[in-house]
Amino acid sequence: MKAVVQRAVNASVTVEKESVGTIDQGLVVLLGVTNEDTEEDARYLAKKIPYLRIFEDQDGKMNHSLVDLGGQMLSISQFTLYGDCRKGRRPNFMQAAKPDQAEQLYESFNQMVEHEGVKVETGQFGAMMDVQLTNSGPVTLIIDSKER
Image 1 (spheres, rainbow, N blue to C red):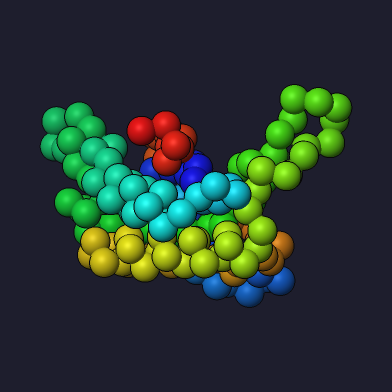
Image 2 (spheres, one colour; image 1 turned 90 degrees about the vertical axis):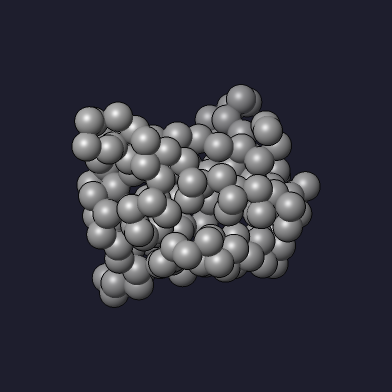
């Protein structure tokens, strides 16, 4: 699994102009699932992301995690993270998991994060979504469960 993690002041996602998820201070996570991913990959990211020390303390150093702050997470499924752009001009999405597998692992990831005590808002799996966020810092990280 691959996650793009962005520290946000606020964020929201809409589907057909209707708000389906919104957070205040927290993280926006764009989550991609590939063919080889398993529950273990979801577990790894669910244990890693909420505890990343990427929020500033009183001295301006990144010493606090999402869990420390009681922040929220906006989780968005993002199959395009597995777009292969090496050949030609049209991305190849063959490495992205099929929708059934991807949705199941995406939902598992969200539930596992909630078990860590984080409120999780989500987009709508498989839908065309508009995501808005105010990226704080900006702080943006890419985490791949296969690169541990």
